[in-house]
Amino acid sequence: MRLIQFENENGQRHVGVVDGDRVQVVKGVTSTRELALSAIRGGKGLLAQIDAQGLESGPVYRELLESNRVLAPLDHDDAAHCLVSGTGLTHLGSASTRDKMHQQVAVEEKVTDTMQIFRWGLEGGRPSSGTPGAQPEWFYKGDGSIVVRPGQDFPVPDFAEDFGEEPELTGLYVIGYDGKPYRVGFALGNEFSDHVTERKNYLYLAHSKLRYCSFGPELLIGELPAHLAGTSRILRNGEVLWEKEFLSGESNMCHTLENLEYHHFKYAQFLRPGDVHVHFFGTATLSFADGIKAEPGDTFEVSLDALGEPLRNGIAVHAVAVPAGGVTSL
Image 1 (cartoon, rainbow, N blue to C red):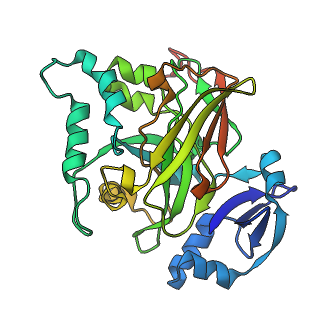
Image 2 (image 1 turned 135 degrees about the horizontal axis):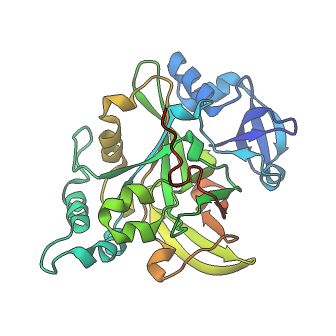
């Protein structure tokens, strides 16, 4: 089953189940988070909770997408209580591009930090269930205010040096009132980063990740296929500028999802009841690696049949919010 969040013509929020060309509306809730917390309180799974809530006939799905009324499939009404984060070097083949970016400052005989972390993942990222494995790379992107809905442009600061897509599998979580993390489901994501900034120096990785992102439009409930194959595209003036297959799912990763989840939620500060977590699981496919530079006006399109409709976003540059010297002393 796949869920969406959407607005009706009056701007009222709803949760819907994708049912072919139409959307079935889940009764009695206005957000996926609310639905998940009700399931947790009642000791039910999401499917059972949806059955208990009931469904009613809703709008045509295509009309919602075309009118830009589909929201991210999980959010929090207070953006400060949604943490967006991610892991890198998690997919087979993901180290090659990163290593090329960073080995320019490494001694030729020395293994780069990138390759070392990747090898740790290959050797210890798939432990038996219930056992901690190798720790992956981890990064912070922002809170819920940096998430744009499917179909919207990424607001890019005017100091950005690159507009780089990152097609990824995304895990979506709610922290229950018992302080435990619950996985609501998975979504298609575009993590979006500044690879030119990162390439300058590995220590600029944190800066490069502080960009907007998007995920959805749909949330997959239940078991995730072990092998996922999708397509990442950049469209310019309606024509395909670049296109490449990307792979995800545990069959194509050097870490299990359980291991990646453990190394995120092992931190007590991430277990605040009621909070939402959006976690990007990494990628091995970037247009940047093929010498492509996206431009304002281009459209990113990430598609993967198992996760529903494609995720599309554009690029729009805006002026920096606080100029140099713009901090006021009190």
